[in-house]
Length: 116
Image 1 (tube, rainbow, N blue to C red):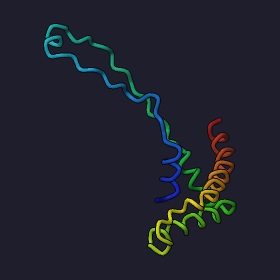
Image 2 (image 1 turned 90 degrees about the horizontal axis):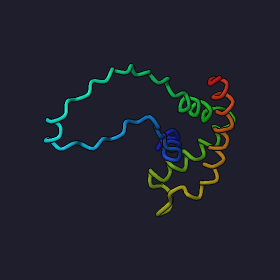
Image 3 (image 1 turned 180 degrees about the horizontal axis):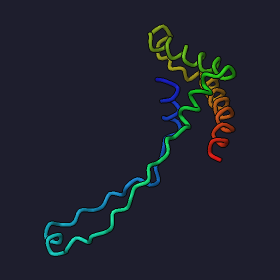
Image 4 (image 1 turned 45 degrees about the horizontal axis):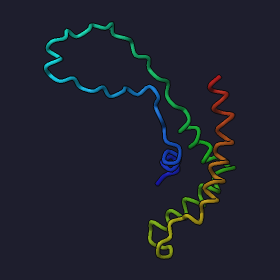
């Protein structure tokens, strides 16, 4: 599990402009009604989300890298089977919380300066 997928699991992305699912009409009603011709709206392209790139950059920064390496080391140890039975790095949760705090503190000024 990479750090970016970990952040994605903790902070899921929600898209407010996702198309709604419409209930299908029975075939009898469709044949009786004429389809309304609506003008095609031009879809605006959404700008690329810069948050994941900034999070990755800050995770690799000198300030946050030791925390990321500590958590990655625990994951590698557990996945290699070198840890004790049932180990899952939950005991390293404080490191993950400090890492998230470090990354968010690094990302915030960069993100807001680019959004202006």
